[in-house]
Amino acid sequence: MKRKPKDFLIAFLLVSGLLIFAGCGKVERYSMTDIAMGTVTNQTIYSKDGDLTLAVRDIMLELEQEELSWRIEGSEIAQINAAAGSGVYTPVSDRLYKELGILIKLSEDSGGAFDISIHPVAALWNIDAWAAGENLEEEENQAAEINLEEQTAEESTFLDKQQSVIIPSREQIALALSHTGYENLSLTDSSIMLPKDMALDLGAAGKGIACDRIAAYLKEQAVCGAVISVGGSVVTIGKKPDGTPWQIGIIDPRDTSSFIGILYLEGENFVSTSGDYERYVEVDGVRYHHILNPATGYPADSGVRSVTILCDSGILSDALSTACFVLGVEEGMALAESYGAQALFVDMEGNISMTDGMKQFFKEK
Image (tube, rainbow, N blue to C red):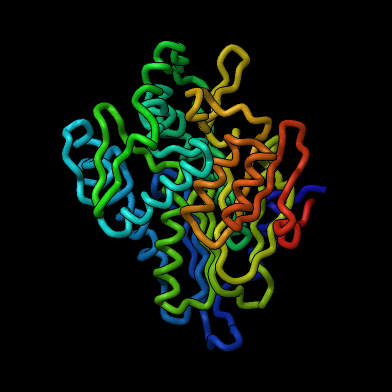
């Protein structure tokens, strides 16, 4: 029997106020549900030194505004894109330089199934508009029904069915694809250069990067425990005050009101899920989702509906979930294991496949 998200509300009501945590003294529970980085975020932090939720929110906002957004003029990614075709290298911060190196290597290791230069194709599909406006309000209402300690490792953002959607032509997709290709990027000496008409989009890794930054900050503050979700990416830190594991619900892609099972985790973990139900539209009976195959320019059709990655890195959990979704079960499983990550796949028939290591954390409902 699948556990409904609302069932977690009961457990939530039992945990509130001032708590005693062995080895950490008196701690208080702080929580926040908000919107940042274009998605709903949930925070639960157990701290003895005051409320850190506003500081965590500011980390996400600054990350988007100063580094990762291709829309916000002045952000590092926007500056890189603006200089495309100029023949000039754009300097980047040490942190972004390291992250770009990680993502380009993953692009190579995945045979291009993950590609940070996908922006021209994504812009053609106008995917960001699919998740705009009222959809965030709907997602926030859904998130409010879920116990903030029992985080769900996925977001569900749905298209406004009244919005007009135009499916790009094969000719348009072919032209956009000609302006992509991670192998055409030049990354060297803390700077990067893009050919003309290319553009970076870190949307498939940005929420995981945010989880990395949040984890680093909270560990500096010596919090007793925390679980933070940024859309489909989740980070757990430390322990729950009652000593029980963190519980991360994995959404059933066939019924997003329920879970296929729960991950039981202790300590620091990063979990990301990519699914074909996150952002999608149906046109003439055909579903078009937001996870694009960089080889074809169309939504990935690998026989899976969702992929969940568990590992010790936020950026890798997020990016690997996308790469493994594009690759499918067999190749995706091999890629995840090559990175020392655990993976769980749900195929089109609802069958679950997972790495051996994932089995010790996952309990099916």
